[in-house]
Image (cartoon, rainbow, N blue to C red; front, side):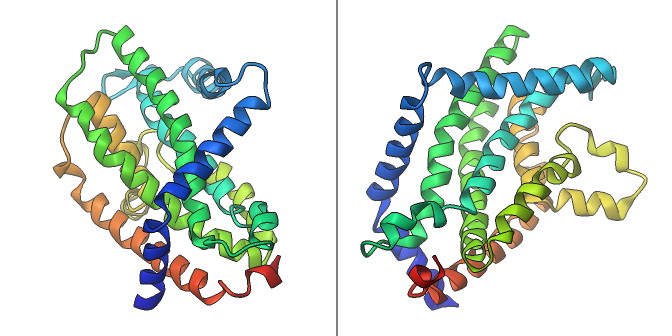
Length: 269
């Protein structure tokens, strides 16, 4: 186990520039495929946000949560989902999409999930700019709590990379893994308290504990604290412990699989 973790860490840290280069190339390649380029990095999440706001904010008449307007409260959590979701769905296919490279040369396969998550980080910054604009338009002013994003963004990247490393290998062993993940992502969105407040399940303590143990919910809480609640890091210490345990398990499991099947990747392709 320790050998596998060391192998993955060494391969990733020794190829930091390669990870950056691949992520940059993929990002620019996507932009060149459309005439409007980077415009869609802003337009796509904005359209989705407006859709959810229309359905839940207007049709379901949700006025607000904890004294904040619903659109303001929702967008602070949805920006996390717009980062985690593509990282998971694209990350599980990270190795398979590079089969032409992996089969023709000696390539550090374990860095591929990180390249996907780094590429999506640029899109995440675009979404955050929308959140900043919404907050400033509502009268908010920059404050020290916004710096909490410098803590939660790397945690989101680490979680997404750890999960993608595990699922990318499993997807090589069975192609049904990606189909299962795509089918479960919609369920994960509604099961994670992003579009609704966790206070709605307060009468079910076991359900509440399970919801709070979700690493994605911890990151969502952090983003909402940075923009809205301004409570600091301490109130979410229990969620942080759950985040550490789950993310560590995912990373170790992914590292063990990556190390075990590294010489069989070509055969699996």
